[in-house]
Length: 202
Image (cartoon, rainbow, N blue to C red):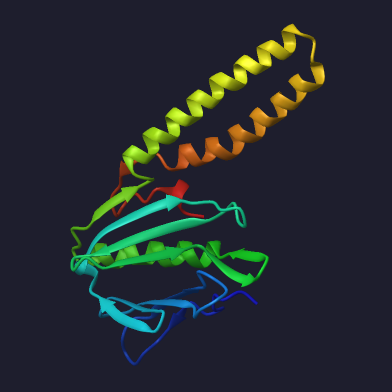
């Protein structure tokens, strides 16, 4: 069974419902548990716990971070005003060879977190995508690889290496689908509470 709970909301007395999200970052160790409460973001990670007031969250970065085990993996990096950092992933480890997506629960949690922060008058910096330097380096690498592949393809056609050319075409198509999606989703940009980057939510 996945780590996420079937019931994402809980009620406590007369207070508003709590939104809960749980995931395992690795097979070894306890699950990371988060709740959106009236007091703020309650977290429990590796035996440590605390509550961040919604106005005390200084920044959120949303990104798309696929892995070899799961191509649909999204990530939210939160930074508190005290310098603390929290990472929330959209996937959870189920077995040694299976990483399970939790698309619906993750999206609901991240969306509700932004709603509550906006309601609390948050002035947090909201960032979509990877860092600008990392993005520029990724673009440069893709450009160089594209030039190299184009050169090899031209040579294969010129020498009549049709099987080699077919292989290169297939490789370029697969590469463009995987890496192209990563580059497109992770373009660095700012966003606001009313316009969450849909490409960075499952």
